[in-house]
View 1: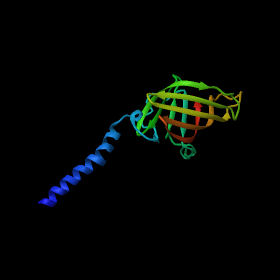
View 2: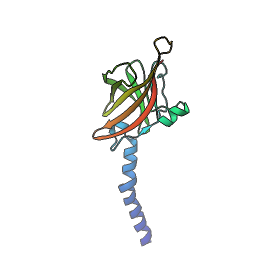
View 3: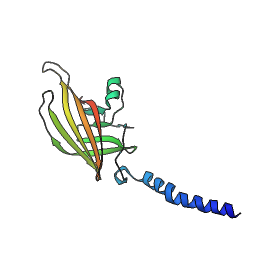
View 4: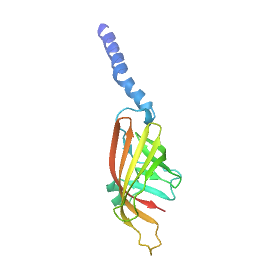
Length: 160
């Protein structure tokens, strides 16, 4: 009987010291979590299906599938999956570059304590005589929360 009560006490201490903090951290919103943000695939792009930008991991881009890590729209909004949750953000800044191949620009978005910088480099534009409205990009996406950040390389398109 003495061994059983020792085991119960030990399990209670283990729960309080290890499992409970993990459960509390998981219940927090992405902006409240500690550590470097995790960047995932967008679960539900919702109304982000018209004009805007779509960025993917390079492997997914070359497979031509529909898995995106960043989607923006013409309303200066963007969505990303951060720490397993789709987060809608709003544009807070833009540093424009040129429109020629290799031109560079930066978009900045924010939601609560999460800030995202998207560093675009044009890889291909339509010719002036073409009817398409797409521009191809390489982009580096950096997600910051406090002093922690995570960066990924992406490829994608902007236009309609």
